[in-house]
Amino acid sequence: MTRKTKLATFVALVTWALPATADPDPTNWAAILEEAQGQTVYWHAWGGSTATNDFIAWAGEQIKETYDVTLEHVKLADTADAVTRVLSEKQAGRDDDGAVDMIWINGPNFAAMKEADLLFGPFAESLPNWQFVDVEGKAVQTDFTVPTEGFEAPWAMAQVVFMHDTDDLPDALPNVEAILDWATANPGRFTYPQPPDFLGTTFLKQVLIDLTDNDAILSQPVDTANYEAVTDPLWDFLDQLTPHLWRSGTVYPTTGPAQLQLIANDEVDLAISFSPGEATTAIANGQLPPSVRTFVLEDGTLGNASFVAIPYNSGAKAGAMVLANFLMSPKAQLRAQDPEILGYGTVLDVEALPETDRAAFAALDLGIATLTPEELGQVRPEPHPSWMIRIAEDWSERYGAGR
Image (tube, rainbow, N blue to C red; front, side, top):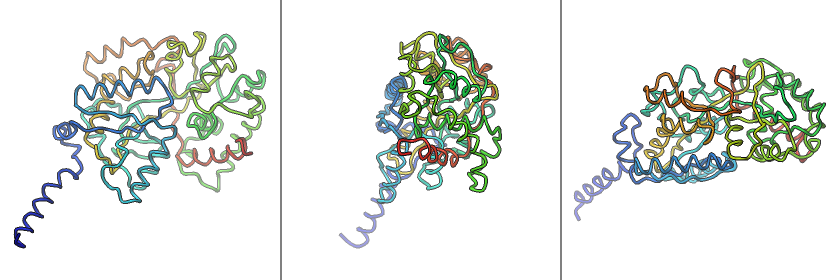
């Protein structure tokens, strides 16, 4: 082979190889659909809920049938495991065909991946179903105060509610001080998941925002100069509450489902949830007694969106975008909001949907334990991720097993 022929062959090989390694263009949906056919998307997502796992399996069936995209649910106990995997691959030089194609993510994990340039995008706001997303009324373009800038796509809305067994705790409690008073008068009947479980840290944040009532300070990164002063009311609250918790605060449920089981066993009467429809779903599934209802605090409760993001080295970016777009579809959102399936809040602006879809949402029975959107009231914003990290660390030192 002559030198000229070798060079021509090399150029041809490089030219041929480029399309296989180049990232898909999120604005060219037709090309994405074509490239996605036959791809397998390894979605790393929390696997601690049977109802959520079943929904993800259903989504996989839908995109396989419609788009020839295979979904493999990699069940996580901690989202940080997927982040660590991607970071390890980058450090090892594996910049293509990584093990993680999509992650259910938000908060500090998203902030860390964005900061380290570990994400593909922006892509979310180019997806066809983005046109239906409620960008005015819901926090779908910021994640724990960090702008998403199209690097993650929302697929569910969450808001803190408290589940109470009305046989033992008939009335709603208006604020966290009332929760403390009730827990003191009824020792052993309340607990929360052990931080750093996300629901446990959510309880800490809810107490903090209710006691400080200063969202502006909490939206900024932790300032060591004021951290102690801002969090003092939280630690004082927990010092008073802890001796009156289930098993006197010497042990905590490890997860939200474990906390749910304590209500089912009539060991506690009050529990925190990040899904307004979870109680109705659990009643329908026989996991909770029919006497359980939900309430929110008078000054509002913490809310956020659940997102999916695509790592920079995913080998199935087109398939991942197809899945992300499907999760934002009216069909998937309607199923996710059905309290007999998941009971998650929708990310869509229902009034902007075609008439048939609007009618389907209007006809959805939210169930006996689910508050209406009006009853859910004010949604309080998430603090900056640094607050969650810092208070979880301090909680472990003050109240964890090693204290």
